[in-house]
Image (cartoon, rainbow, N blue to C red; front, side):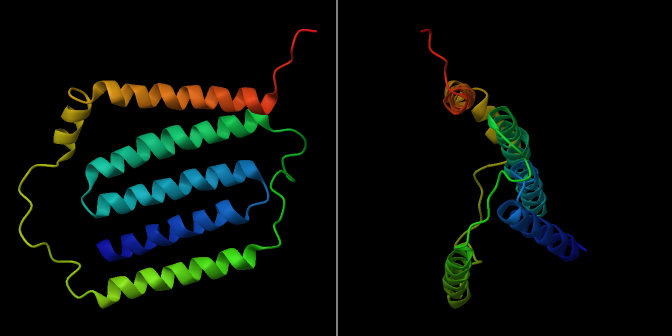
Length: 167
């Protein structure tokens, strides 16, 4: 059953990523990006990486995708349907992607012991342990990253909209 769910969500994530690249509407591309992030979060759940799945949903799907949608809608000028023009050099990107995939697959398939850990993992690493660290010892950097993302969004909107000077 787990294998079937894995393939369903892996295909969903890949199809959504394809939609990000090929969609002519930039708002649709942003929503495809959120769908791709959500598919990857389910894959993390299947690998028993609960903390990564939660971070994927909260940070990437929740924050980054919504920030991209807001930034696109705030800075968009003209017709939305023609906001993502077609690029004639997509063949080079496809060629390099297939070549990179082949190299990574070759490395993974030729290494016989890539799935075996030398010893059992015993030092915590659960979602509870990570959350305690983030909300106690690393709280200042965690909040600084949130403020930095907010300031970056505001700066991007200001740069895209342009500032009207007093003349």
